Length: 256
Image (cartoon, rainbow, N blue to C red; front, side):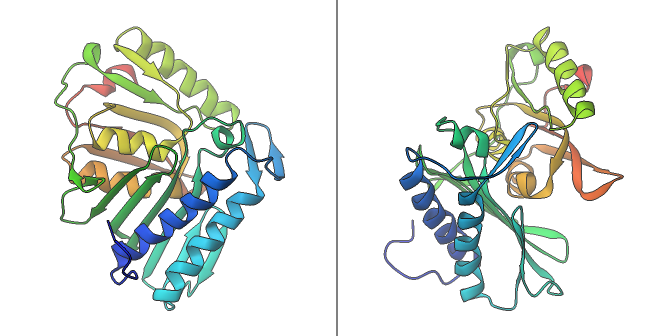
């Protein structure tokens, strides 16, 4: 997409950062991973931080006055209205277990308005990009949401979160959806799930508790293709949400 020219625009910089992080993750996919923290339903790897540091360095080299808000911490000028939202490995548990379904997600917002989204799957070699007001692309080709209108012909992606409340909600939604939808999926990467909706592979994604860095790029992509994303902030954390994302056509509320 970029050839050998250095990144110039913000979108080019985001793509370059995602692809460089993808090279790092792909090179380490079959290696033993260093675990920094073991949680009840999650892991933190040394490569999570290494990937974010790589992305941060590339972005701030080009735009030193901007802010980084990432899963692995903050960097740059946090007073800036230009904020990059970074998930350096979305699908860390998949990555750790050798399941090739994970991605790098980078979004940018200006004064709370999303303007850039990049999602990169380094194992499949798929790159989704979007700018506000523009057409979402997959490897340079325009994509759009599916035309499916009924639950019975749809594939739904349900996330279960990481605490007891979110797990119970997710499992009940999975049960309800299984009675109606053609197929249900729990895939382990919210960002890829949203990218799949944006290009018509999936029809909806619901989760009771998800962080901003998981969904920011995907939100812009889905909305730019005519889909619908509804975020409900959680009272205990303003950057954690309940999410319902669809192609804008199926009656997802029937199983919520």
